[in-house]
Length: 236
Image 1 (spheres, helix red, strand yellow):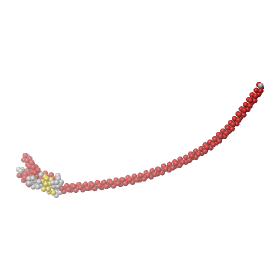
Image 2 (cartoon, rainbow, N blue to C red; image 1 turned 180 degrees about the vertical axis):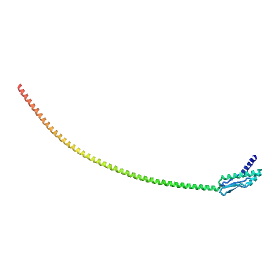
Image 3 (tube, rainbow, N blue to C red; image 1 turned 60 degrees about the vertical axis):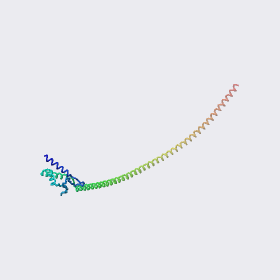
Image 4 (tube, rainbow, N blue to C red; image 1 turned 90 degrees about the vertical axis):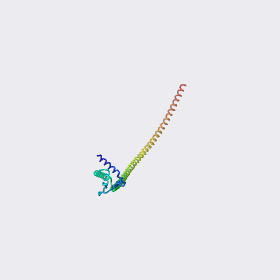
């Protein structure tokens, strides 16, 4: 167990010294050897996926040179090779990345086109609805103006009829007032004439009564004077 652990430790150290240097170009992976080992080159399989092939023979010889038995060295090299293959599966090749970018750009372009088409369709629908609403508003405005004009004409006709009735009543009332005034003036003249006649008659009667009273008084005075003279003669 201790020997296996030591062997594993040396294999890991070997893998670390051989380190994976992933280039910035997508999908290309190289393993550089710091101890003058062979390069691990990138190969493209027939299915389009990339795989890393390790020079297992050299690795086995190096492990054997470090004191690891041949069988264990082969097993460790196989395990390391499988591990490197599993690592490469987690990365995407440059062509796959380009393909993914192309699909993404295509989807983005399609989305933009669909979005623009949707916006244009929505704008067209909105414009049609706006035109329809404007037409409906103009129609309602025209109908409202016609109704208002008809109502105003009806009100104007009613006002004219009322004005005619008022003028007619005013003329009738004026005629009646003129007739009443004429009757009042006539009655006033008649009353004045009657009053003047009564006054004249009363004045004449008063003058006659006054003359009669004066005559009566004078007759009375004459009678008294005569009686006085008679009595005076008798006493004398």
